[in-house]
Amino acid sequence: VEAFLAPKPLRGKKLLITAGPTFEPIDPVRGITNHSSGKMGFAIARAAHEAGAEVTLVAGPVHLATPRGVQRIDVQSAQQMYDAVLPLAAYQHAFIASAAVADWRPSQPHEHKLKKAEGGATAPTLAMTDNPDILAAVARLPKPPYCVGFAAESEKLAEHAEAKRRRKGIPLIVANLGPATFGRDDNALLLIDEHGQRELPRADKLTLARELISELSKRL
Ligand code: CTP
Ligand code: CA
Image (tube, rainbow, N blue to C red; front, side, top):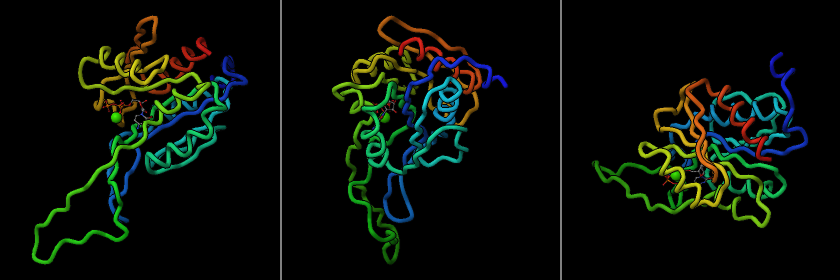
C-alpha cells in the first residue's frame, strides 16, 4: 500500500544497478568471492521501482528474490558483470554501483579440478590479473549516466570516500563502514557529493534505499 501510494519522482527514468559479490573461478569447483549479501542493491532496485523508474539489476551470485517489476540479469564474475553493464549503460539516466566487485581474478582458471600432489603439501600459487573497474568505465563514457558509487571503508570514512569519488570521476558516492555491514539488515550511510556530506542515520536497508532514491531523484 505504501509503495502504491508513493509519489513517482523517477517515472520515465531508466536506472541500472549492480549488486552482490562477484565470483572469480580458480578451477571448475573453486573460486574467490566476498561476503557481500546484495541486500543493499536489491533494496535500492525495489525503491527505484516504487519511485516509478524502469530498473535493470545486474546481480552477482546472491540468494535473494528479484524485486517486483525489476529486470534482473545474473552474472558470476567481474568480467561478466562488466560485459552485462557496459552495453546498457549509455541508455540509462543513472547507474548505481553497489556491487562488491572483486578487484582481481585468477589469470587463467584451470580447466580441471586442481589435485593435491601425491604425498602431500604442494600448495599452488595463483597468478592474479586486474579486473576492469566497471564504475570508472561507465563514468568515462562520452555521455555517462548520473553515476553513484559505494565505498565501504574500515577507517577515515569521509576522507577515503571523497578521494574515491574524485578518482572515479563520479558525482555522488555513498560511504559506509565495512565490512561490518555485510549481510546485516540495517546500515548507516554517508552521502558525499561536490556540495558536501549528508548522513542517513542507521536504519533498515529498505528505508535507506528509499532515502537514497529520493536524494537521487532531486539530482536527475
Ligand atoms: N567498482 C566497480 N568495479 C570494480 C571495482 C569497484 O564497479 N572492479 C565499484 C563498486 O561497485 C563501488 C565503487 O566502485 O561502487 C568502489 O568500490 P571499492 O571496492 O570501494 O573501490 P576500489 O576502487 O576498488 O578501491 P579499493 O577496493 O582499493 O578501496
Ligand atoms: Ca575494490
